[in-house]
Image (cartoon, rainbow, N blue to C red; front, side, top):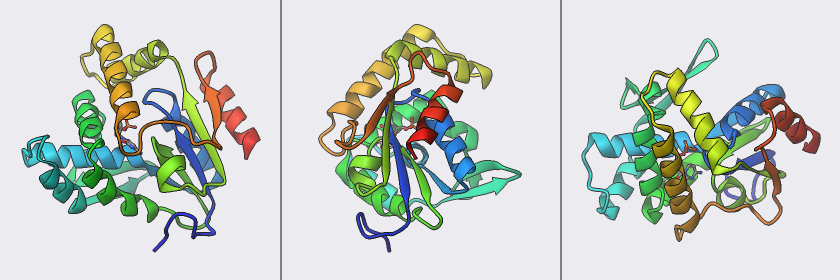
Length: 224
Ligand code: C5P
């Protein structure tokens, strides 16, 4: 079992708000290095889907913790694409829906949910290395990560990026609503009492507002 500070397996922790480009950068980085990849947001989203499926009230903290602790999830790789399964059902697409993200961010504020998912996340730390994408990778889950990056961008740009992504997936979205939701999600993520979204003291902060994905990627690679 790996605990923080007790593993020789290197970790690159990339944290930041949604829409900062983290997902694209970390997937690419893991591929480039040939390392494992942890999309910790996907775990919170899977927990959210389980909560929605079981119709657990969002104020029943004990029951939410139970659901997170007993998650039956699996990731399968098919020809390079990763599929997420919840209780054997393919939920890869539903995982990315905006309402799933909103519920994920609500249950992510609950200590019992975070505790239940912590050990699961640390188990991804396997040789030759791990690229971890999240909100608290560098601060809580892998505080001994060799490189910590905090990737950010203005809320306007993040809303626009999200808008394009969701549109491409055929979701009907409204930019103004998306912007409001992103601001509300930022506030929830930053102000919760456990593992709030903030850069680790030793993190390198990269603002991707005026940068292309390639430019951000080159910056990150230059830091390794
Ligand atoms: O990154 P993604 O948008 O998929 O994450 C969904 C939600 O899960 C975030 O808004 C955040 O509230 C929560 N989360 C978290 N800690 C992480 C990853 C995600 O609290 N490490």
